[in-house]
Picture: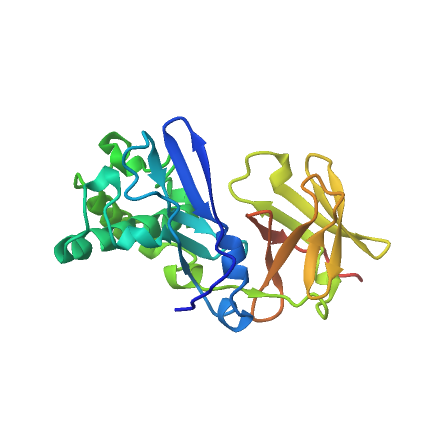
Length: 274
């Protein structure tokens, strides 16, 4: 457990009858010492609650947590501190009993964790639409049972436990290159964001006159630059300056690039020069 006394500003957005109250979880994680961030496979960020009381009397439904991603691709579960001490209005009134805590909190944690597993292997179609397990008609035909935990058990035993990569590998913090010493030529190759939904998700990184370029299948091109140990999209990119994370394997080969909240997996490398 790492306790911080700063970088926990809580904001909110309101649309119709829903108010989302989240802290800047990315800033919170980034303020943790590097010795911890470099060895952390999953985050659970607990921030001060932005909900007045239990949320009753405001004619709105407060959302204060869920499953997200840190920019490194590591899963990030988010909740506010009041989540553990009192029931929000939509779950009842008053403090939790010990039995309620032991029953409900683990179910909530599993629910958030399964969101991450389902997005890790999109090829199985286990969450094509959010919370599809709530509708029994959307379950795969070979799944049995009727309730949310049944769906999780079926998904684990019939899909995920036999998947590639393994659960252990998929949940492990990747190794990232120190770009201040990493050979830039190793970045050259093709990459793909999965699922491919448009030409911007198919990318080639090239060296042009010694300068790295990001080229996508839509014809958009922008530069990459190295700033200290980090790789950045230049400020002139369509998304502005964006820090990238270069994933490498045990042989210092590039396996993927994470940028703008998405992972572009390596699909090929250029042929070696004769």
